[in-house]
Image 1 (tube, rainbow, N blue to C red):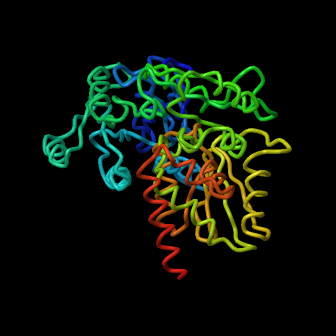
Image 2 (image 1 turned 180 degrees about the vertical axis):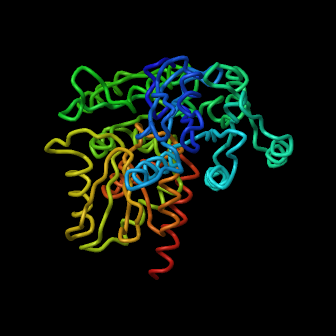
Length: 417
């Protein structure tokens, strides 16, 4: 992966701390670039500053330099709110301080990260002025919190810091999970159905399709890409059936009709439910569609900030299909990008896109927040398959998810009897 690796595929490293402890200087020293403005004036960093780079052996990472968590005043409160939102997408948290200011702010940041099960690394900067006490270092070591000592302005301790970052990185970033290749296998064929419609970017494929193709190539699998209109003819030309067919969710009905039932079938969005989130939880969320009643509020969360077109999937097609399924009008609300409501209690269902533009940490955080609020969450592909009556077919490549669906369906049937 190189500098064009999407943000959602990168390890997100959040840099937190008080104002003027050298967070921006540290980021500049790590990246060897003037990414963040450095000033003696406290609070120079306002909005989070992002810097993608390669950090071997991890690979692509995204550093996020945040505003001081101890900022003051009305503007400071807005900065703090944006800083706290970074917690939701942080895979590894770096808490920057200097030996003379270790206290309640730093402890709260560490506690917040640990409550989310996010790995933490503490950096004592400005060590040329004052070094941390042995007692403090011993206390952090006893809690399995790694530390590094730096003088960022002079580049001292940066090599050691990079080693600490690599050691603290979550294991999945050193051994990336597969998107689809594990379902296909080396030497086996996957057929990808890619509609070319108004929503397809001119001259390009959408990100989940591109990433699925690359994942298949990395797994030494074979890959055939066709439009939905050519699918049946393509299957007839094959000497052996494919191991898997993957379709854009909007073409589910036609593709399901053209693909023999003995061939496993699923959608790109469902693959990303597993890759970026929690497939089993979102399967349960899709089945919550049966509890919806006319007038209920449904939140649709889109990770990208595209301009909606006439037949937009999240704003037109899914609302239409769910309205037909429920038999009455629902209240749909939409958020985009990193926006996500603080209060979810008024919603009866949350529907996320495939989250290809989010990292897995942010998607899992959203799922956790929905669970805490008692609100079911699912995603585009799952809710489309469920509302169109082909849910079991779309889950056929995922035995555990199929078991969850069948168990819940049997419980409902027994309860109805």
